[in-house]
Structures are given as C-alpha cells and as structure tokens.
Amino acid sequence: MPGYFREIALSKESFTIIDYPVIFENNPENYVLSGKPDSILSFTVSSGGLDLLTLRYFSSKIPVRIDLSDVRPRQDGDYFWASIPTFEFSGKMLAQLNLSEEHITVSPEYLNLRFEPMTGRKVKVIPRLNIGFEKQFMLSGSLKATPDSVLVLGQKEIVDNITFVDTRLTDLKNIAASQKVNVGLLIPENFPNVKLVPETVTVEIPVDQYTESTVEISLRVGDPATKIKTFPQKVKITFHVGLKDFSRVSDDMFMAQVNYNPNEPTSRLKVNLVRSPSFVNIVRIEPESVEFLILK
Image (cartoon, rainbow, N blue to C red; front, side, top):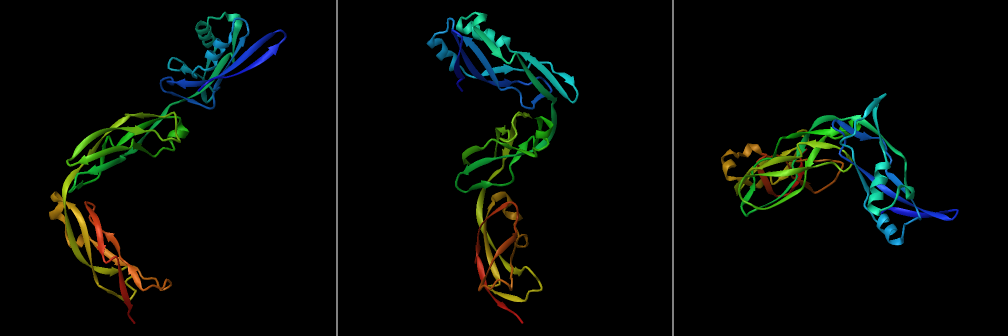
C-alpha cells in the first residue's frame, strides 16, 4: 500500500508530508492490542536535498511494520498501556534517504497503545473437507479431528463470541482407503487478532468400499388420529452401505411416513424418510409420493 503525500509551501521553503499506514505485529506475550491505536505516521520532509526521484521512492514504500514483542505494557486502571517513541522510525528514513535530521520530522511523537490481558477458551473444531472418492468407495463414518477442540486466545469480547473453528477447506481426490491428513485451522474473518493453539489438527477419514442394497418398509401416517390409506402402503429404500457395516442393516432401522393436512388439498402425499442408520447413504425412495384415500 503506497504512502500518501502532499506538498505545503511555507515562506520560501516547501515541505512534503507523507502519510504511512502502520501495521502492528507480534503482540507482547500474554497481551492483546485493543481499542483503536494510531494507524498513520506522518513524515514531514523539507525541500532541502529532496529531489523528485527520492520523493517517488519515499512515497511508494510499503507500510511501516512495528514489532510489539518487546513492549512491556504498564497497568493504569482496567487497561495496560505502552508508549512507543516514533523518532526511531524517522531515523530509519534518514538512513534510507541519506538525509539529515533537520530535513525530516515524524508525527505523532509517540504511539500510545492500549492492551488487555489475553484470555482464552476451548472451542470445537469442525473439519471442512471436499472428498472425491474412487468408484465404489464412500465415507464410512464421521470425520474426526484430533484434537477435537483448540484454545482460542485473544481479546475477551472477541474470544467470547467464537463458538467453533473450521479447518481450512481442503480438497482430496481419488480416495480409496482410510487415511489421516494434517490441516490448518481457519481464523474467523469477523474475529481478527486471535491466536489458535494448536494451529493445525489431524483429521481422520474413515473409508470403506460400498455396495448398494434396498429395504421395503411399511409407510406410516404422521398423525395416528388421521384416518387415511395410502397407495401403495409400502415404499422401497435404496441405499449405499460400506461392506463392513452391511450385516448391521435391518428393516426396522428405517422409518418413512406421510403427513396429511386437511387445510392443504392435494391428490398425493410426499414420502418423508424420518429414520435411517447413520452409516448409510440414501440413494432414492420409491415412490417419492403416494396417492391416498380418506377413511370415514
């Protein structure tokens, strides 16, 4: 990001004021920067010895980065404060541009920074993976992150609003066997200036070869007081299941029902699958809707 500069003529001498954005890095240990610290340093450069090429170089510099790791905040009331003299930054500019002290000044003279003690809490990790499987392979269980929760450190009012952390979105292709992958964690965009411990987790991906199977089950009516008869009275559920779980599947693990509302006239009722094993993937329900007859 370039600096912004403007020229001011005072008497016979002109001055160039160049504004530099400030980026603070590396908070002091166990502290976090809070409030709205000064984010601009203004360098006033006199015309003496400053040619156009130098000015162009000066104004195109990257933002001033200030390392706070060695700062030692002192408590005053509910907060901790530190003042950083800015003359050292003008000294760096003098050295870079080969100017004397009389040609450059910096404002403000001090950067007054407010800190809060760092607070922390553990939050759940949610794996975010896009997995492409080889033909006839599928996820045979839930993705498991280790550790399953991480410590979020930062300003209390920010940390208190973070309830979970996502992993960085990771694409995996042609997966045909169970495996573990190391993935980084994603700091929420709306909650900057927080630290995650640890910064990476291991995600376990259970994979199994699957087969396709079906069950036929009776169709239930959601409200037992509703007297209707459906046509047909049974539906067929087609699903994929891993080979290691195939023997676990039984008809009573599935439940399908229809819901009739007399205030919504219709000739067919949608079939809803309200129960199925967690280790199967439903492919289709046949039929998806049924005719019905109201019984008196």
